[in-house]
Image 1: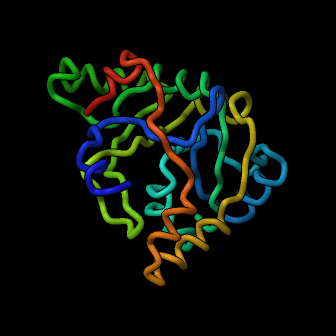
Image 2: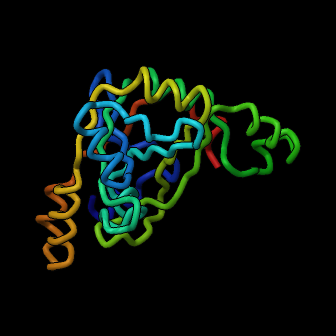
Length: 203
């Protein structure tokens, strides 16, 4: 992404690797969970269903979060391909993770919505190859309760261990070969989503 396209990028827009029927999101886990999930295409019994799980359509934001797969407990980076209708169900049933004056009636109304929503959204600064923040935001989608169960049991189409890709790109970045590193990045395009799905989620 060149400087001009970065400057023209809208602040709130979902960018992701996607097909007509699926969208790819990223997560990072300790090897016991990550390797098992990639091997079977499903999360193992040790995966905690009662905890909120955060999925991230941005590869580079995932790299920022997991330190290119070097942080403890996040050594295995997964690309999880899920059904688009499931992803959009989560957006439709999401609440912003923080209160925004003007978007929510008041603090109490936001807290009530937060308690009732099985999913929540955060918009965090997108990252460049050196993991520096960019002006536009990247979607993080937290799934709990019904949303987490649907994610694990219904939405997953495939799970790939992309730790080797993360390691290779990281090595190129450290060597200063940003052009080659950029060529290896997953292609993330604007995700076509109805405006009504994001209207209640723009911070």
